Image 1 (cartoon, rainbow, N blue to C red):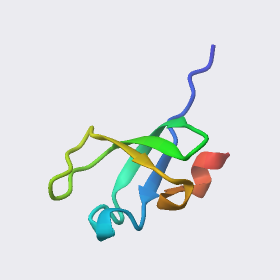
Image 2 (image 1 turned 120 degrees about the vertical axis):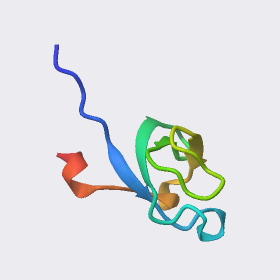
Image 3 (image 1 turned 90 degrees about the horizontal axis):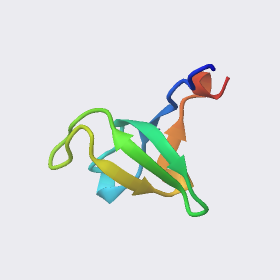
Length: 66
């Protein structure tokens, strides 16, 4: 069985820009958006934190779509 490659993206326009540019890993897709895990720390947010985002707030990297 082949293991799935993790899907990585960038957070944009959330929490008044507090997480802009932070890399995150997609955990699950929901009807309302995405659940992601932070891959780096920034301000009060720590690596490994789980964040719920809308589709507009999380940009999946193109190379991850292949």
